[in-house]
Length: 272
Image 1 (tube, rainbow, N blue to C red):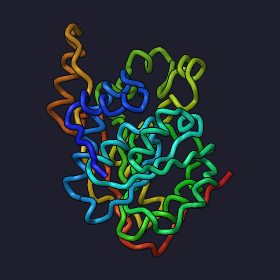
Image 2: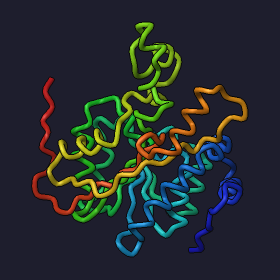
Image 3: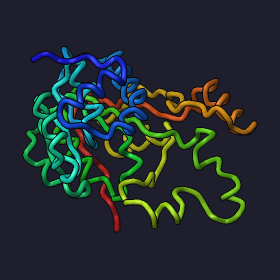
């Protein structure tokens, strides 16, 4: 099967048009992040080391397409309503992507049909910040289906970026707390929220706490992929400059967690 190459956003947009379309504004906005994630993965991993990828939160298959283009064989996980769209199904058929609709990630019973140790890579691109439930049962299922020697790849916003909510001092001093706002809770769909944004240090601890078998082998920060607005204030311009100079202040985190062997399992037992 011929696999198209997507070096530019125009090329991947052309690819999706043949299936009836996609959310092009979303794709154009996030393409640079998708491209950077796959390129970073390919600096230390290649399909020759294992090509089976589970893309959790694959959405409209935009990043899935980049993985497929790089030679990976992808299984995509998302909500059933996402995969009911004809153009998603048509694109998946072209790329030979298996679609696995999961109704409830807190109890992902649909993943039971995936065999033990059946994936080399597990991709969670901008997903972990949306998890609104106790994730232990979910990670137990992920642990089961990733093979020894495989990796979990995480990308997520950096809480300690100057433009993050960690720096919303006006809101802090007016007594309106942190995290997502009341307006966001009431006006947006649940899956839209960044319920918990992390630092890289927190994420490393997160996986070490889940299982001694999880070992973080790469942690990087990427600068913001958003274009700097042409007219911004002095403080905002300073924040943009800081984000680009100090990696710890960059807006995005990239993490690779290796499961070298599967000895201990998921060791956390939630208490209620």
